[in-house]
Length: 332
Image (cartoon, rainbow, N blue to C red; front, side):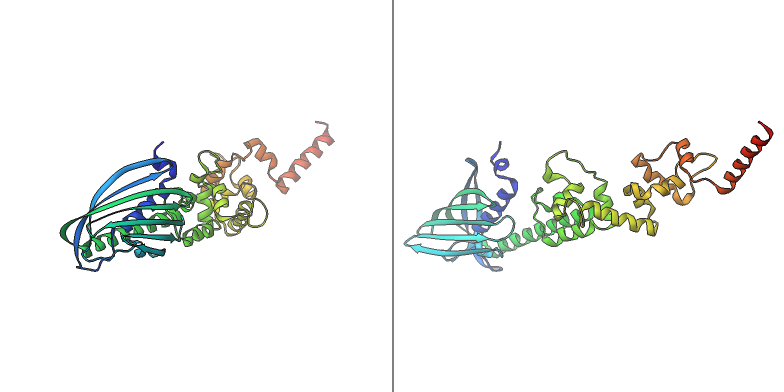
């Protein structure tokens, strides 16, 4: 098993984002910079990712300080201690997953450094080794910052699209972190509000009540109940929501929803308008979609049973009673 699989892709992705911040000092637009060669190594779950060496542009006269983490809005660097050429610090980041850690850096003059960082990302322990040496080539440190900002904006826009798609498609796994995306609470709230609507409930119900596959990757009614904290029974449960929607659908003649999701509530209408219909007595146009939708339940009786279950016509019953009486009088 690879180290990425062992510790979880979300945790590794978070660590790499923070590491990118470490490697990129704050820089202003068009600020003169110089090139450094940076090598990083990461270990997690007892395994190591291959060492990565790249060139980065840092402000030319950047002070020695815990590099870059303060540029993350949700991260805080604290308890900074300097002793000679060494520096230690601690950091913490809010969000999901929460992150905490500590770091140490030792400088060899202004031309090189070595350091380590220990991080806990959502319960996964990670250890990183850092080393850097000054190459001295002139570069635009502001350009690097603009590139990072553009990449962050693109990533944020993509995440927003994924989260909104999760609401539109009613896919519960979008909001539990299973796909590595951390959606804002507002999207989960929208999802949980939509489960109480005909359109939202219908989408989730169409995914069934499957127990197959990993629970965190399901989007069925059970997953919806878990995500939204719905009770197993009683007021506010999935069945309670379904019943309420079905009563409204019957009242408002929302026939397709009624046919698809409301077997007991729609049965009287199905018996009257769908059961036993044929070439000589076709389904009325108004109820065609309802009958097709209701057929999924397999709850309609056979034609003979439907006829027996149908209420008797009073006029026809009177005629039958008269014929029976007449047979009794004339003896056949």
